[in-house]
Structure formats: C-alpha cells, structure tokens
Image 1 (cartoon, each protein chain N blue to C red):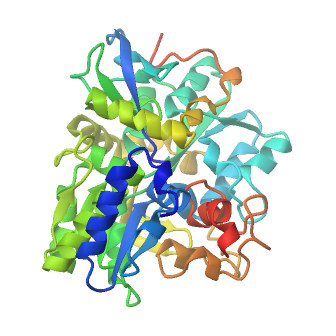
Image 2: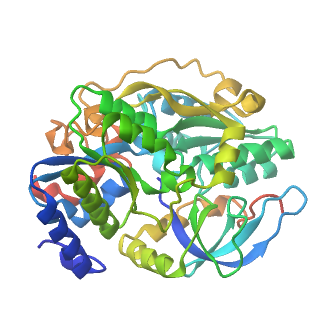
Length: 96
Length: 363
C-alpha cells in the first residue's frame, strides 16, 4: 500500500489555470503522469519517488536504478498498470 | 544459506547477516511496521538468514488490513447507490465486509472502479457531473498527501459531486498502542520508510525516548531490511535507544514539508478504530470543518453503526505481532486469499497472505 516507485522525469508541465504542476515520468519503460506539487525542486532528468500519482521525494539516480531492479524482481512494477484505465481517458492530472 | 543467492547483492547480504550474527548475544524481538516490509521479509526468506536470537514480528502496517468492518460496509452501501461511481485502490476490493466485498457489489451491478490515484477519481467527477464520485481514502501518512491534494483541488475547482470516505490511519500512535500493551515483547522497531519520506522522523524521537526503544527508519529491499536489523541490534546490544535512519536515500529528518502542510490544511487528527485492534486515540485523520462538504460519510446516510469481527479471525493479534498467522486455527483452511475471514489474508501486504503465498510448504 505504501509502495513508492522511482521514475525519471521526461517532461514537466508547469502549473496553469487551476492545474497542478505535473510531469511525465518514465518508470523503467512505462510512462505515466505524476503530480509534482510536492517536489517543486524537481526538474527534467531528475528521479522522483512516486506514490499513487504523486512525487514525494527527489532521489539519486544510482539509487533509483537499484530500486528498479528489486521492484522488477518483486514484480511490483505491475501495480502501475493495475487501474481500470479503460474506464477513464488517458492520464491528465489536475485540469487539462 | 537459503535464498541468499537470489538477493541482488548476495555478498552484501551475507556480510550484513554475519554482522547481525556477531552482534546478537541474547534474544531480541524486532517489529517491522510496514506491510511492504513484511512482504519482502517473508518472500525473501530473510528470517532464515538471521541468527536464532533475532526474531521478527510483523506489525500493523497494512492500511487495508486495519480498515474497520463498518467502513467497508459503508463503502459497499455507498457504492450500491444509484448514480454513484465508487473509486478505490485495487487492494480494497476483495476485503470482506460483514457480508460481502466491494467486488461482490461490483458483480451485482455497482459502479466500482479501481484507480491508481485519487486524482483519477477527481477526473471521473469532472467528466460525469451528474454522478456522485466517491473515493475510498485509505492509507497511512504516505498516501495522505495525495488524498489531501484531491480534496483541496476539488474545493478549488468547485467540484460538488466529489467526496471521499476517509479511513486514514497514523503510524506513531499505533506503535505507542503496541508498546503500551502488557503483552508487548517488542525490543526495537523498523519504522516504515515511505511514511517517513512524508512525515520525517522527528515525531519518533519522543516515542523512542519514552519507551527506551530503538527505532530505525528502514527501506523495503532485503538489503535495506538486513541493514535496518543490523542497526537496531547494534543499538540494543549497546543499550542505546535512538531514532536512526537507514533509508536516507528517500527520507530526511524533516520529511516533505509541502506535503505535510497540505495534509494539515485539509485533515485534522482524530481518534480512529483499527480493525482487530479497536479504537486508538489520535490515530487517524478526518476532514477539517472547512472540507466537511467532501466527507462521503456525512453526504450519504448509510445507517451503518459499529460492526463486530468474525470471532474465529485472530487478525488483531497478528497485527500487533502477538501471534503468527500459522497459529490461527483457520489459516489456510477456512481462511485463504480466495475466501478470507480477515483482511490480513486479502492484501498482498497482509501478514497472513504473505505466509500463505510464500511459506505454506513449511507449515
């Protein structure tokens, strides 16, 4: 439940209108959006630890890579794909 | 040494295990707080690397497992109402309420959707303004920033058809409750890494001092856990009781301040009932008055009061580390992941399910 997965920020969408600062995050090949409101210091190329769509900390790249290997062993990266995405349009966090 | 070769860095694992063996001169009982840690420990057979002096007991750190029955019944009652879209993390769907689960309700026609983030539920509310969209806000401090943001954002956007059913629990009061129990045999804690990513670990310092118990903030990999155990045993053997941080790559002493501020803006601390344990003072979160309009418990009259646990389930004792899952008469027979009596058999992070999946053969 408290699983957090590291990913690399590939692009950042700055806050606009009523939206939240968000980024496209590469989780070892799976790219999803996450909210960056809690990591205002994070920018493109940084690794962030993401939990339920929110980056909670910026972490070191080497550490992120290590965590990836373990998560893959534990098959927990699958959790990212568990949601009923078919019921909702593609990820857009905050307002589009 | 069983499983040690499967570790990413087996040499490091052997070194840490050897260090723990050298240090441990008498019996110590350590509790890992988080269900994710329990999952790693049981799956990797980590207990088998430890000397007989060091015992691990599994803590209450699975929010799915400690969500009380009546809240699950309420969730099902709300989800079954017409024109409602009920959104939840996947783990909650199979948890049995007093008569059925959210998954059963879904099978009977309720619009129950699994979401990855509370922001997905918010999006559903935007897209379907004529439907009530309810999110089951279950979680520890790790998840609270996400749920706080969803409510804060809904308020900002004026989304009146969005609400959350709050089942938020806090870790330090549960640790305090475990320490206060007269049966408590815990000598040290491995604190939950990602909870501390959000909250930092200052709040554990008074706990450590008051109970003279070492608390080591620990990550989730087998090596993290071995290192956390090594640090805790080192403290115990030298008579120290401090808060230390094994998981420094993701945890700072003061945590994530913007996240803490948003939690405090939206939620306030409240008493909370833990499944199998009972009410623990100041151990949960509820919406502040300003955000009460988003409280699904107030918006939907379900008429559900207190609900009692099935008598055979000993999940309360398992969650407090007083019994191992094997010690339950229903384990693996009348209680399985397919037909669970209690939540620890449902969630992949529940101690009973972890034992069922990975240690069945040893029984």
